[in-house]
Length: 503
Image (cartoon, rainbow, N blue to C red; front, side):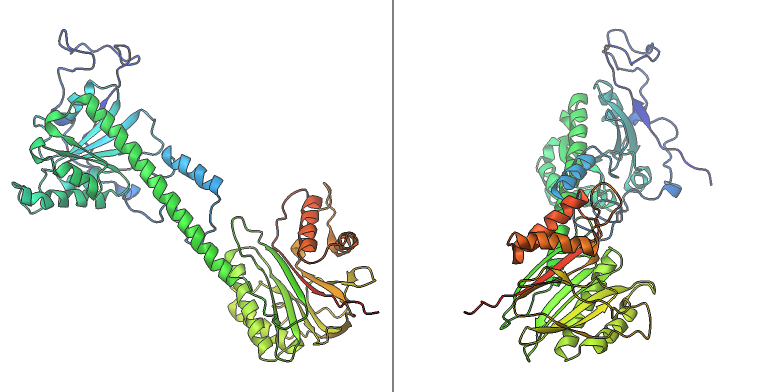
C-alpha cells in the first residue's frame, strides 16, 4: 500500500516587499499587493489531496499524565520556583505540546470544511498577512484525523460540517448537531487549539462553541487575512497558557495530596502521663518529599514504661519510605502487645523480609525501653549508631554498643541482646540516624562521625541549650560543617528527664 502524502501549502511571510531572499514572484498581476498570487491552488492544496497515515509516529493526541511525560502520581511535589519554570517551558511550547520545537513564526493550520475549493480560500487570505502558515485541508473528520500530526498548531473547524451519518443543521434547534462535530474534534485533539467558523446568521453558535471548548470563533463573512492570522496566534497561545495553568494546578493538587498523605504517616508520640519531654526533627533526603526511609516512634505502655525507637531503611526512594512506615507501625503494635528486645526485633525482621521489594534491602534500628522510674533502660541495637546521653553533672557520651546486633534483614537467624544501662536521675537521651553524622567536616573527605557528634553536643549543652533549641542548633551546626544541606535522610529524637534538685 503506497504512503499517501498530505495536502499542504506553505504561505511565506512577506518582509519589505520580498520573501527573504527567494526568487521574486513573476506570476503576480500588475498592481496587486505583495504576497498575492495568480496561481493559488483551490483551498490552498497542492498534490492530489490524499490524506496520509501517521504510521509509526503514533497518534499525537494520545495522552498520559497531565504533563505528557508519563510520570507516576506519587512523584514528589514541585517547589514554587520549579513550577514557575515548568510554566514558562510549557508556554514556550517545549514540553510536548503540539507544534513544540517549531519556529515561533511558523505555524501549521488544519482547516476542516467540506468544500475547500469554495468561496472561503484560506491560503489566499493568509497570503496578505505577515505570517508564515502551513495550511492543510480536510473535507471530513476521518481525513482530519489522519492529517492531525504533532506539527499542527491550530484547527479551523467549519461548524456547518455535518457529523458522520447526519444531515446538515438547518435550524437553531440543530445547533447541538453542529456542536457535536466540535465536541468530536475536541476529543480527537484535546491538546490542539481550535477555532470555530460560523455564519453571521448563526451568531449564537460562536459563543456556545467557546463555552464547549474552542479557543475562539470567527464569522465566515467577516473573515480576512489579518483577522485570521491574529486569531490563529491568539488561539495557539491561549491553548498553551491554558495547558500550562492546568498542569500547574494539577501539580499543586498532587503536592497538597502527597503532603497530607505523608504528614499523616509521620508518628504522633503517645507519652501521656510520662514525666519526660519529647522533641524530634525529621528531614528526608529526597527533594520535595516529606517522608524518607528513616522512621521513629515513642509510646508509653500501661505499666509506665516508655519505649522509643529510631530506624533507617537503606535507600532513599518512596519504596523505602513506605517500608519504614510499615516497620514503625509494626513496632508500635508489637510494643503494645508486650514484646521487647530480641523477640520484638526478630518479629520485625520477619515483617521486613515479607514486605521488602528486594532481598538486599535491610534496615538498622535502635530500641530503648525506659523503666517507669526513669533511672534505667534496656537498649537493643541492630546495626544502628549508639544513642547519646548527657547525664546531669557529666559530659555527653555514647551509650555502650558492644552487644550491637546485625541490621534487620541481613542474617535470617540473627539475635539482638538487650543490654541494661543506667541513666541516672536527670538526663537527656538523643537517638539519631546516620544521616546526621555522615556529613563532611569542612572541604575535605573527613566525616563528622559519632565522636564528632559527641563533641558538638557537648558544646551545645555547655551553652545551656535543651529540648527543641538543642535539636535546632545541632541540625544547624551539622549543616554548617557539611558546607550545605545533608544528602541523606535525617531523623533525631530527644527525650529529657529533668528532676529538680532538692535541698
